[in-house]
Length: 150
Image (tube, rainbow, N blue to C red; front, top):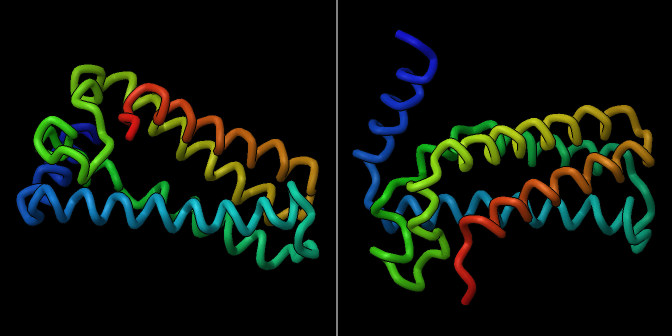
């Protein structure tokens, strides 16, 4: 069985175990936790509002990478869009009409998160700033394409 088929089966199994509302809540919790960790990095490396602490920055970056690589794609199904759930979600139905693009954005996000974790371990603040921007850019790409405005 190919990797894509295995991923699809795993995704289908996860979807079968959760109600659409639970998928959305879990998905949103993951993104909120990543945003909180991005805020910790931003305060130390970008804004300078907090003293730089490499261990804390690395821990935040590792958390972001772990969530990005956790299989969150299983929390997306056609039953979890604004069309079905209204204001409980911001996922546009267009996501499922553009799965190739959505998948590429997701892979780019994971790669950017992994790079952030890697450079955070090095302590190179210039590299962390660049990688932080790349993660933010990948978030924006998904939001611009597939996130409904409120």
